[in-house]
Each structure stands twice: as C-alpha cells, then as structure tokens.
Figure (cartoon, rainbow, N blue to C red):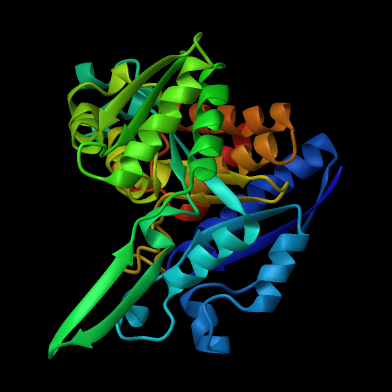
Length: 352
C-alpha cells in the first residue's frame, strides 16, 4: 500500500524524535511491502521565523491532502512573548481545526519494567491501563469572544468556554465505542456543579449512557478525577472530557508511566486524515543534545498505522518491539539510562 505522510518536526527536540520515527516506519515499509512518501513542512516557531506565520495556508493544505500527519513538538522561550501577534501554539490549534480532528486519544499503560520510574508506589500502578479521550476543537481554547482591552483604565481579558450539544455527543459516543473493546467503563469528567457548559456535557453524556446500557458510565468532577488518577488509577478505564480539563489531566496521567517521553497520542475526526504526536513538549533545554526519548513518537506511528491506515499487524509490530526493547533494559536519560535518541531507536528497530 502507498501512503503520503506530512511530517511537521516543529521546534526543540521535535526534529530529533520525528527523524527516528521515520526510520521505524521505513523498517515497517521494507518488512511489510508498503510505500511511505514523506513530505516535510514547517509549523510552529520555525515557521514563524521563516514565514512570519506559525501555520501557513500552504502547509495546512498539504496536511489536508495527505493520508496522515506526524508532528514533533512546537514552542519554546524564543516565541513566548505574550504580546506577540503569532505564537507556535496558535499554529497547533489552527492545524487541529483545519484537519477537523475533534478527539485526542492518549493511552496510558504502565510497562512492568518501568514501575520504578514512576513517582507512585508500585501497588498503585498494578493493572493501570487508561485511555483518555480529550475533546480537541471546542471549549475555552476556541470560544469567542476572546480578547484583551482597556476598560476604565484597567486591563481586561476574557475567554469564552462554549460547547454545542453535537460536539459533546460525538466525543462521548466515541468514548463508548472504544470502551466496548476494553473494560466497558466510561468516566465522563466535568465541572457540572459550577459550569453551565459542564451541565450540558453531563446531560448529553447521561443520554448516551442510557442508550449504551452494556457500558458502565460514571460522572466525575474534574477535581475528583485529578485525585483519583493518583489515588486509584487502576479503577479507571476510558476517561472522556472537554478540552482544557483533558489538557491538564493527560499531563497528570502521563507521569504514571514514568516519563512523558514514553506516551503517544492520536487526534482523530470525521475525515481520514489523522494527526499523530507524542504528548511531550519541545523540551528546549535538551534540544540538540541527542538525548530525547523517541519512544512516544515511535508509538504514535503505531497509532497512525492502526487508526488511519487500518494496518493492525504493523501497528502491533511496533508496539511489541517497544515492549521488548524496554524489557531488555534499554533506557534513555529520562528513564535513568544512557542511550542516545538514535541508539534507542536502533534498539527498537532491531526488535521490529
């Protein structure tokens, strides 16, 4: 099969981890007789530097015309000026909106060999296998009005948290569909005791729950969920929540695995073009040193093969290779080891 992949290496360690993920895909290509056509484009801070825009119309069009998109990471202190007309994160939000990817899937599974790397006690981690589904194109990050202005001599800022019922419905329905192939439990996270948008969220979730009686549904306030992720993470299966809550909770959940460098993500929508990326940031403090963990990016390509290309055997081959590599003791610096980014990828490729 032939596929066109748009690569957006981005900023910081993004180019380093994306290049290793490409090597893994090339191994899959030769082993399973597929053809991956890679086209590299700029997005984020590097795009601001060259084009004056974090995401150009041309880059977005190329992404929309490809079969899938692999992103490294964007951002860094160079582009952090809050008064700047454009910032790397704006390009990321525009890319998600432009691709129509409304669901971000972040699996959190603890590898037995990495239990010691987690800040939680080993007994807390036994049986942890969570899938967090974050709504990605609505809520506070996209709501209008969004502005800053002077009012009566004082600076004023406003953001708007808004959701339509159809936006909630499609993400919660996806959660139930995915839970059906897992432990058949959905935790819908909101702040219904305070926010009107959350009361709509809970109402829609309850309705969908009544239509899927084979799946257990529990409603949970976001503050309770943040505690539950630490106190009893093994009790959770599929978590579905709105944009900002999901942004925060997924970073919290990533710590369970011992390092953010281990975890992948997939952003899916109604179109066939998916967006895949590790959950970590651009890590400018270690950029260029060749010590970043490429595993999260490599596992993101496995999610790409599964969700966008329907290549289950190939996806499993990458995931099994990562498991075997970790079990054999391979570690990058974030996991207390000494392997470079390239060496870690080499070990994974050996096991594919």
